Length: 137
Image 1 (tube, one colour):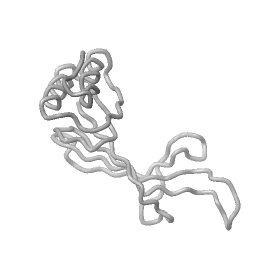
Image 2: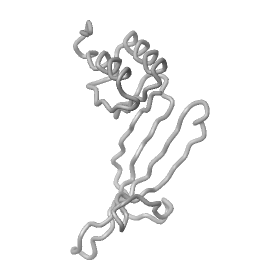
Image 3: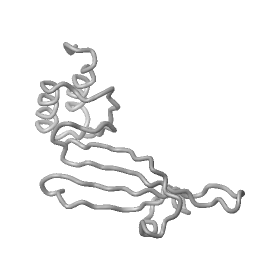
Image 4: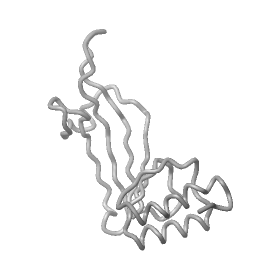
């Protein structure tokens, strides 16, 4: 399936993936054109598929996930090994997911898994980098 604009070709790929996958991740070069956007969102709703994308989504995403304020633990006074990375994860949405939520997971924790970290106010050395994921369902 070819799009009229090669820049929007990823939206056609996403429409095909919606038929085959419940959840998939794409890193597009930019947001789709308005016509492509409407068609893709209709397809995602019809199939019940979820598209995760790191770009700011111009459409009607059900959830928006952001991660930022990263901090590392483990380095002492110029020595030591990085052991744990803590980030602030936020989820905002529409409908049933309208109430914003925030957590500070450790990635990984001391046991190689994921656990909840200290409250945001207790974490030192924040990094201003922030990632955005739009979840369309």
